[in-house]
Amino acid sequence: MSRLVNGVKSFSTAASSLLADASAAAARSARQPTSFQVFRDVPELRQLRRKLIQNDRTIGFVPTMGALHEGHLSLIREAARENTDVFVSIYVNPTQFGINEDLSSYPRTWDSDVKKLKKLNEELGSLGAGTGRITAIFAPTSKVMYPTLPPSSEIDGHGSFVTITPLSRKLEGVSRPVFFRGVATVCMKLFNATTPDRVYFGQKDVQQSVIIKRMVKDFLIDTEVRIVATAREADGLALSSRNVYLGARRRIVGLTLHKALSAAVEAYQAGKTSRDDILGAARSIAERVLSEQQSLPPSERALYEVDYISLADPESLEELDLVDPKKGAVLSTAFKMAPLEETKPGEDCGLGDGKVPVRLIDNMILQPQA
Image (tube, rainbow, N blue to C red; front, top):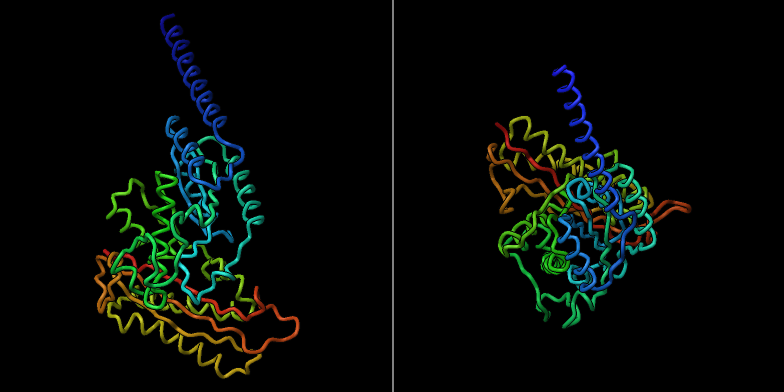
């Protein structure tokens, strides 16, 4: 009889525990928003953030410049896995564009972006309890982001800026001297506005991720920087908002970045550690493809200029002559795809009819080896 009674009690306790777990899961699910709010200014966004803190919610923040693609969505999915709420910013930041760069032509696709985010929220909602949702979209004006002075893209322009040196002067910073000043400044502002528990960036912009990590560390910002693997097309092309300008011809040639970096990775995995051996494998492919393109008539070719192919320390981004296998390295490159010289009737030339130069960047990590 005592065994039966104990068994009944054990069953009753287990059932109560299951019911309690189910009730808690249902409560968590009920608290999750089914749609998001759009905020144009900071005070209202901060008010929402305070409410979330009071209810022990966590914020994952994904900063974007819009023109959303699968790479952005993968960052949001990761943020939703690790937080109860996700904030997404959509703001084309003028201070990271140089005076002669493509600020005016940068794609702005608000309606499409909102549609994608609503669809993604439905996807996240179908995953049930334990998965966060997009709660807020922060889409400020430049007056909100730069309230005192108009934003400046001049190297010696007036304004309140965040500079992270010498990291910002390497690689991309050589040809784009104000770029990372603008990135660091806008990210500092966005972090101050959203006070996230975690922020999410893609590995594709490797120099940016290193600079943001350094900024968070040096300025004692209370947020965790999470880096998510580069999202790619099936053929290896890194996803980018600028890919819409490529068109079919330049897109095929643009794959040279991925092929060149892959060859360098193979050299490292085969035991090569010297700069000449690793980068030589990448340069060989880049030079061969360019030579092939130059031999074609203008109506068929897509020319490019290699801005840099780098082999650098993963923390300092200092160029390496020899890779320490215990530490690994960062391989990165930037190609400038030139405008098409001649086009054919009906050819897919991309947004801008092939007249817009396209800067493509990519990177791969040489992983430490035992």
